[in-house]
Image (cartoon, rainbow over all chains, first blue to last red; front, side, top):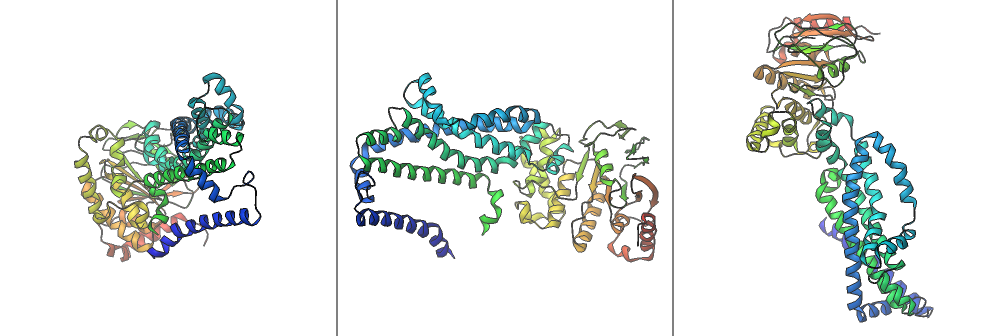
Length: 257
Length: 249
């Protein structure tokens, strides 16, 4: 049973990734694809190793701007979500504005942010924040709105205040929604940070890729893409781990299986 | 509806006037949709009455009361809390326990533990609701309704979703708890045997508009043994109630 579990959760994805790289390598060699169009994985990994210092340096910048933006989005999204879920009037008032705001492509906002804050990490942090708070707000509000009235009655019958009901029932009840949205938000925050770096920045993976592209260093561009993918998976996995840690009760079936 | 030794009365639903003495166990039976649960919601203060007055212990009811404990047809346990923490919930809300919760958490936990033990759930305090059977969940729910030592226990079809054997088991558990604590109980049910087995007085409600059509005192001395439910006297009371409720056959 345990061996089978290991096969499914570790061997299967590893084999799949490996197969993907092998296929990519084969295609590049068989069709002699020029390195400036699509470099083979071997070229990409070579570039990654050769430029490991600037890649690590810039990855770190992207990582921390992503996390900073994500952290602000988490706090802000949680607070706004609770406010929206608190009362129908707040919900009705804020929702259209939120949707309108979320419909604006964040790429269009980056130049404004650069105008305000100059080149650097702040526009990246703010873009990561702006792009990622929306799903958190919507999920927390949904969790609160779908709380079973019977559960609330248990507390209301004891004379609990609205704040008590929120603290003891509403918020715990919407935590699975909250953590679920964090998984979406972390990947969005990452996209936001990189988009901002690509539009205008002096550091970060996005900036590195932009420079490499200008110099026709295509293997470095792909190395950057790979690093982004790996970081994305790592951030997602970390958030998912936090989710199961805090809301195990909502996954009761899976946890025991 | 009057609670306590003082005289006070209330009309609920339509022309419902009934009084309960402290320590009494009354049951309200009636066909589905006759307003039994609405009556319960009124008494608990969850819904304000449209007209008439409602007094508990001589004071008019304007909102939920802390002297009341309530259990519903669904156990309504919070799925993120284990059985013990679910039972502790009212203490986190109701004064004066609320203020003492921090300093006397240990004592309160011991109290909840003891209460759960008294209904046979001693080994299940750390279990989460989904790990408990329906009967165990309902016992936990009743413990939760009792932990803050309310003077009145309101039970809204608490055994409705259980199988017949578990139900009888819980009847006895409730009987013992009531005898031990001398709490006033108002039980709403559609199970006539349950009503007759547990209650001093059974009120029969009619369908829309909900009103009390009959007050029936069960003359069998309490506490009753489950064997009583097979005696002729018991059957006669149940039969009489059944005829009052009517319906098509």
